Amino acid sequence: MYGGNDFREDRAGWVQSDLYVLSLPGFVWFQANTTSEPRSSHACIVANNRQMLVVGGTGAGGGNFTKPDVWDQGLAVLDLPSLSWKHQYDADAGPQAIADWYANG
Figure (cartoon, rainbow, N blue to C red):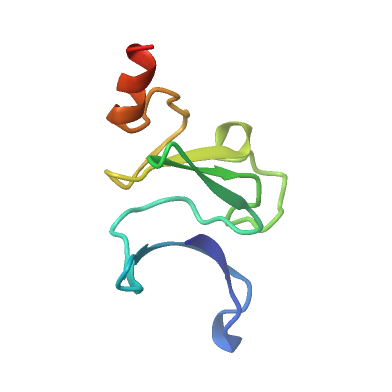
């Protein structure tokens, strides 16, 4: 789970950059030790079990479009194994077993 707005009374509307990972099957949430740009009103999808694509939304300016978006095309990619942010999707970054299957026809 990534980003969103903090609606506590003392911090209403603050855009968040927190990233949490749910460990299964234990159902325990862990906060990831990674830094990123704050984001809200975005969508996330996991591709190839390795990359999380984050699309759209607004940054810390909360819709103040006088500043350019720090994300090219409103897109960021989180490499899940390393929990590092990228600016480009890597179609070849899927699990090795799938890459091997395609390579072997």
